[in-house]
Every structure is written in structure tokens, then in C-alpha cells.
Image 1 (tube, rainbow, N blue to C red):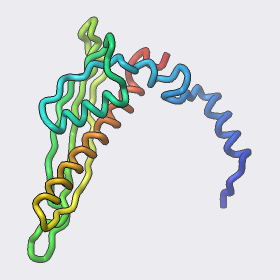
Image 2: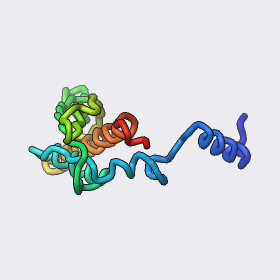
Image 3: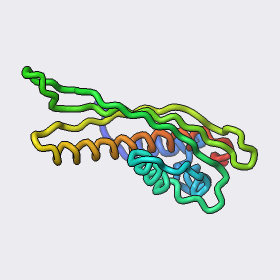
Image 4: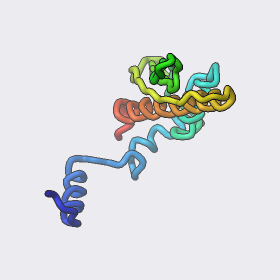
Length: 162
């Protein structure tokens, strides 16, 4: 059995420092180099509005953007739990986001990819409660997709690690 020890924590932190580990939002971290540098395409619906809003909260609104981010979001809903009387009581919301980050000066693609996420909500007897649960699930899905894209950008944008 492995027991907690301050020595283990100190040794682990020294090992991480030795391998070049830098916290994303620490001094000279990638998070600061991309802050306010990405102009995200204009949202066209509620899902993309929630996506862009969350991404701008994390990455900052662009001042003089160096990059442009294009995206395409696809969502679908699937019955997850069905009762014996064939009534769906839980829905799964699946999302897929394709993105491309372009250098605005050269218009070349710097990073691109596809991320997936899912969330779920319960169906209820009232229409209003079910609508609210559906909207909340879609909002959570956009946050999950945005987080995955941002993580990928931190890892793949050339020059962001400098």
C-alpha cells in the first residue's frame, strides 16, 4: 500500500521541473501566449454562441489577433434509457466539433482536428422542465467541446510553448 508522504510530493515536483513541465497559466506558460490572440468565427445559433462565449472567457477577447479559429459543430440526440412501456426517460446528447486554426497573416492552417464529447439529461413529465434540461445539456456539451479544443491548441500551436 502506498502511503502519503511529503517527500513523495516534493520528489514528484522536482521530477516535473526537471522534464521541462510548465504550468499552462504559470509564468511563461502557453495560456498567456494565446491570451487575446485568437479571433473565433461569429456564432450562428445558440450552441455556437455558448461555445464561442466560453472560449472567449478562457482565451480572452482578441485585441490584435494573430490567429483565426473556424469551427463546425454537429450534435445529435439519442434515447438512452427506455422503460418497458417504450417511454424514453433519459437522453444522450452527442457532439462533434471540427476546428481549424489559421495564421491570419499567411492564412495557413496552424492546427486542426476534431473533438467529441457527450452529456445527458433526464426526460420529465413536464414540457418546460424537459426543455430546460435539454438546453442545459447542450450548454454543458459546448463547454466540454470548447475545453477539448483549447487543450489541443495549448499542445499544438507552434510558438505557443516559447
